Image 1: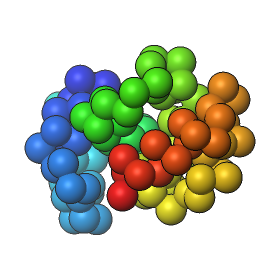
Image 2: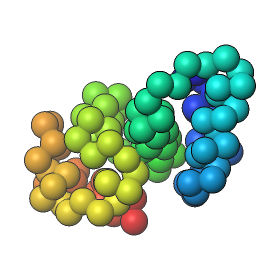
Image 3: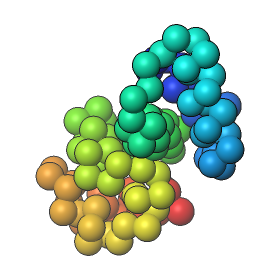
Image 4: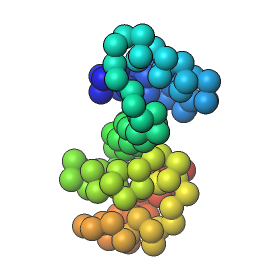
Length: 107
């Protein structure tokens, strides 16, 4: 299912609306995927989108470990976009200077 979610995110680079998300859930069920918690699928989509955006924006100093820490802390691209420099600097191994670069990159 993870590949299917990544494909969905790639097809919706600017995000998706509720109807598109419901359509994805219906498609997954038609394909035989077990979707007992739709909210969990939504969280996975948001985390995949955040990972994709961090990769696409290629902030110097943000490698796999820091990217994972940002995803764990903020959970979605929207969550990171609304974070302050101080919020980002609270992520382990991210200092204020790097936090400024991250915040600048996502705006």
